[in-house]
Amino acid sequence: MNTKVKILDEGNLDIEIIKEAGEIIRNGGLVAFPTETVYGLGANALDPEAVEKIFKAKGRPQDNPLIVHIAEIEDMKPLAIDISPVALKFIQNFWPGPMTVILPKSSIVPDITSASLDSVGIRMPSNVIARELIKAAKVPIAAPSANVSGKPSPTDVDRCIEDLNGKVDLILGGSMCDVGVESTVIDCTVSPSCILRPGGITLEMLREIEKEVYIDPAIMKKAEGNNRPKSPGMKYRHYAPNAPVKIVKGNLNKTIAKINEMVENYISENKAVGIIATDETREFYKNALVISVGSRHNMLSVSKNLFETLRSFDDSKVDIIISEAFEEKGIGLAIMNRLNKSAGFDIIKV
Ligand code: TXA
Ligand code: MG
Image (cartoon, rainbow, N blue to C red; front, side):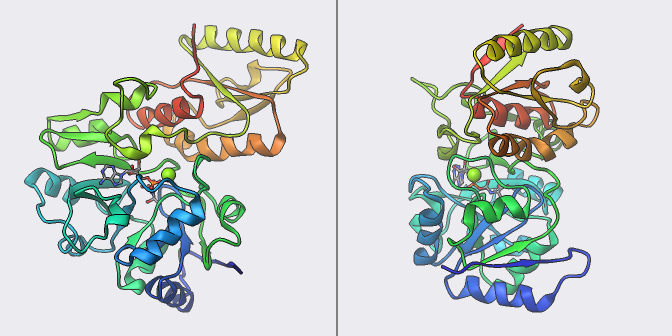
């Protein structure tokens, strides 16, 4: 397939391009597009044949449901049959934005979109390209992250092209995604509601609106035995660059010392090491490819750069990646969830 790429200026959208993209979606094609979280790979959520193309393009397991993206709150009504007062409160406070609510689905949502579950994940993104595309398509858009299954999600258009060139009709490019990790998924079919995937709308933010919110305990542990996450997508190996990732967790000074010690050992085995450091610590490492993922004083900078940092180590072909850890509060919970998964929970405590 010949994939067109169109780069848009978010401050001055080319409406003709958006119209063309909307038509492709309406006619059953695939369009990749930026959102405030990560790039998405979109198709008409109500057209089973179009949705099937998403699974093929990504190599995605069929038991993993897709999120349905809408442009206005009213667009949710035909998709969900019962919107609880709690769900409504979350929606009113956090849409448009990086939050997906799981609601009991209506019969217009095809089984392939929701992986035959009786619920559906719905999200209203804030990114202007995403919103205008959905409006132009005049249908809700099913969109998983625009990566090949297993890879870290793309947060800029070049990574999106890397994964999807030749597999989709059109890639819309915008600026780098702000949040950098995928949306918070909150299950509102249960009471109290439950976070199935942490993201940009944090546990603390949700609890300010509704005291009783809990986190699926499975998401911060390795999926094995009885520990099965409720969100199908969270059970797969994910966010993984080619080289194995190890996380060193604990007191920051001890972390730095431990990482330097590990580097020496790997070097003696002729291995090239990549280090995920921060602005505050990067200067303390040597004999490795050191990338600062952001500042510890601005955790949003860390979430924004995380996937790009993981993917850039693939380009440099290091043999092993060692990462510092972050406090699991605020967006730090989402950062550690993705890092833990990319490392297959290979955590060294110091
Ligand atoms: O930020 C995002 O959410 C991005 C952008 C493109 O919007 N999309 C995204 O989609 O991350 P995806 O498919 O990569 O991840 C969707 C997650 C998966 O873990 C999936 O299992 C879960 O949401 N999910 C979707 N529908 C669900 C449902 N009905 N019940 C439980 N989990 C659901
Ligand atoms: Mg994904």
